[in-house]
Amino acid sequence: MQLSRRKLAAVLASATTLRAQQPPRAPADADPELKIARDRLQANARALAAANIPVATEPAFQFKA
Image: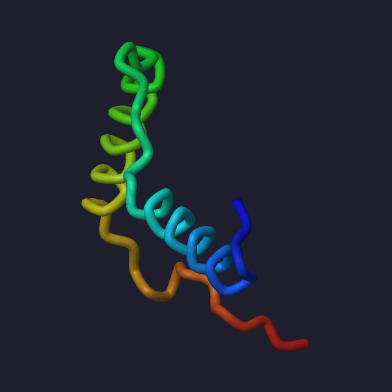
């Protein structure tokens, strides 16, 4: 089977596009420790978002010497 360079490029581009469109699959038996860690991270994020910190205590974004 002989392909021209243009046809070969079209075939490779279409294969790459099809692969990029498919979402990554999660394993059927996901690690329970991973779920626990994600839940803990989300709980910590909610707790930090609920805390009110005065602007005076936050550091500056640019430190000038």
